Image (cartoon, helix red, strand yellow):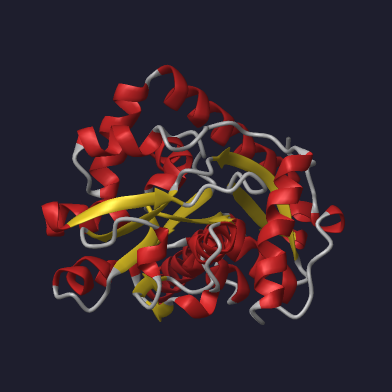
Length: 310
């Protein structure tokens, strides 16, 4: 009887130790958050091909804003997002830094309107759906300003991008602004009732796509940070050298047809690194958010760079 009790006790101890060991290993994993969108194909490819390794937990969200929220809430160690959410995150969370830029492409943001709207002047007084705080939000208003339209000349409708197609179909909106696949989704549902009026390109902003990380993550998991950046570099190389295969992989995760995905990825340059033009692009977006009251001060980008992993 005593031997049986001892055996049960030993078995319980082993189970407890195994449980805590499993939890410990789980806690050691680096939580990497990225949206399941065209702009984030580097991450989709790297994760699919196993470039990140076993010590990285990949978590997908709907948008760059959601990725920034995950960083703020402590649900992520690193996250990918556009220049808009990056600016907001850096301005509100002092414990975050930029690790690298993994892609850029000023033509990624699109303005899709109903067919009645033929030119920029026709937008006056019209309702435009956009996700507030997104990179497209900043790109839209900069584009309007560059085309001699004030923000007061249009009615901005805060919109979850998932709801944009139905809102356009039911004529609740006259136009939507978004990166892919939001514009494409509208075109698919509304077909010949809509068209692309313009892409929201801006000579002062090439729409850098950024990887940000917690400062303590960079300090305590420097090798893992380097592993992530190296994985993105390999993924970009794969995209550039094998566009058809990359398209096939990404389309499955994003939910687009391969021909549509192929068109979308050409709107971005899949190049990893950091240049002064990236800083200037981010500052261009920051100035808009400061003017619109979205942030209280422009973050010092030079002080928030941590390029140790490159």
